[in-house]
Image (cartoon, rainbow, N blue to C red; front, side):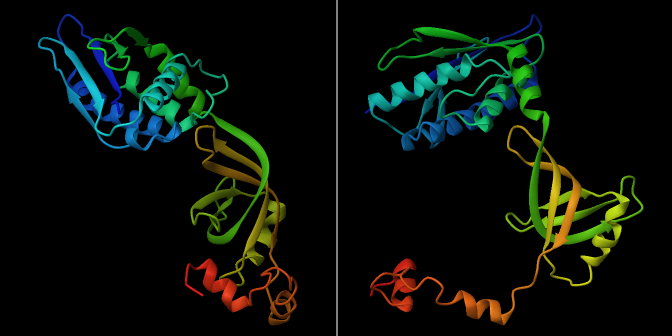
Length: 270
């Protein structure tokens, strides 16, 4: 078994190292390394990390995984890390690496002051000293951050319940509580849809289907707002609809009865 290690070094200015760097860099590093462990799917590299081998007179220390992995997994992790370091903004993410991980990598360099620089030393298995050093560029970090914080547009549909209405705003909008994640989404609508918006408020639990231009953050696809082009209230499900649903797929449960199938899906013994 093996542990993964890196060496971090901040080149200080003549006056010293910014206090904010001392607080931010270790925390941002831990978050990044854990996200990398999730991306390469190595359990032993998703746990806590420890800091060792501090050096006097500079911010220089080693970060080591608290958990263990086999040598092939450590090698895979190292290779993925090198691809992240080599990543260029506005290009396709390295295979298996999430946008969230790349954004967190950028926070490493963004956590140091403008007159400081950051290097990362990579160890091979069993080596006492880093056999390779990589510079984490402040310019690269800024480019990654700006790229993933960009808002992008796409046509799409969301559905939910109207939470609140702001008809005197410019442009007017309503907040829709989306069904999939229960979050509020700002929906801007044209005046021609005003009557439909009001109609959606007649029943408190009415489900509204909204179509339009969705603006979301590139990093995590979190929706910033929607410009509504069309909207309608979803028809209510009646008892007759439910009756038609039951029995529509008689072979779905195979040789099991519906009750036995449900018990099995819930993990209960037959």
